[in-house]
Image 1 (cartoon, rainbow, N blue to C red):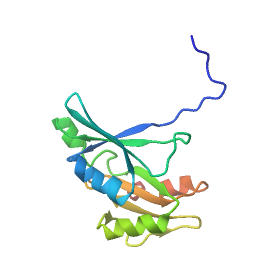
Image 2 (cartoon, rainbow, N blue to C red):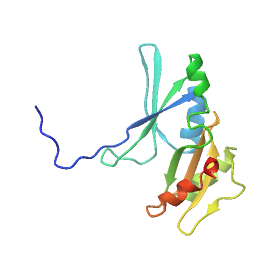
Image 3 (tube, rainbow, N blue to C red):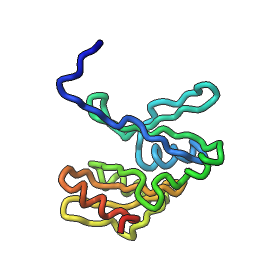
Length: 155
């Protein structure tokens, strides 16, 4: 029996995104948000596609997105409704201008007319191709709670 580690370090490793089409998901998350495809293979007749934010290393905590094409009625009902009226994902970037300008140039739906300007960060709420809300936030380590209160559905 293995002994317990001296310091516990749990991480969230993967979130499933139900989608109508994997290419449509990749266009948004890889094309607009610059995620990297880590896996794209067929397993038992089902396509497994996993994408992660750019420039992560195995030494940093990471969470990847797994894209699943909805097939059942229950899956189809979840497409675009994964968090109800609230923000589904929060993506933080330390290259705000590049990512924000790419998102705008690709015609991604942005719920805010202008970025929300706070003391230590900028943020906008995007809508992925399926209707899920995604906060794009200038990376900060001191204002996470404030950012969550700005969620479009949280007011």
